[in-house]
Length: 260
Image (cartoon, rainbow, N blue to C red; front, side, top):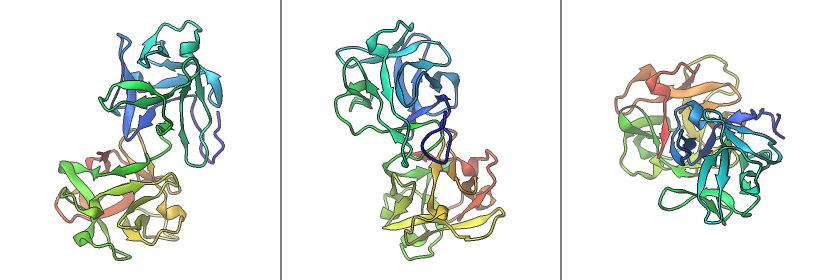
């Protein structure tokens, strides 16, 4: 299946909300936890772009609901509570997933229990396509935060690692346009034509350029999709003030980030 964008949406994919994945288990429970790329976090869409079931890859059971709004998995039975509208993503790669029987959207309650929410604010990422909207800390190795060097928002300031301190420049706004912003500036690869590794990453005036686009993957990588390379730490260091760079994704700890 191909989305109405430049990236393909797999028929089997993870479902991400605010940096965490929809998970299940053999007992039929469904919940939100950190992404781990396991089969219990893989969901198969019968008809992405229309109505159909959403099946857990590990159990073969269908995502189900009831009038109370609870979410779980059951043996697929063709019932309307297992019927979901999952439209193809638009330019923001985000979708709202609607239960046909209840008319309510798949969401997350304040008690961290999955509910079919009557509201429309819950937008899910399909597969590894997008970063999630909202404001987050980006936490890396040694539980330190991505921020702007010296807390500055001056154009050209390097993005670096430092102990999480609640600074405004450690609070990143993930936009539906795939930008990542702090202090009114965008996270950017400082390289208009360079194609190699170890490209510096900085804050710059937001322009919407390809070097300001980012994809947060369920593998905990933050990727520039145009270059298909990962945000990481120079020398894979966990020291304060370590600057970030864009390099070939290699699975190292210095390239792993979680959104909190």
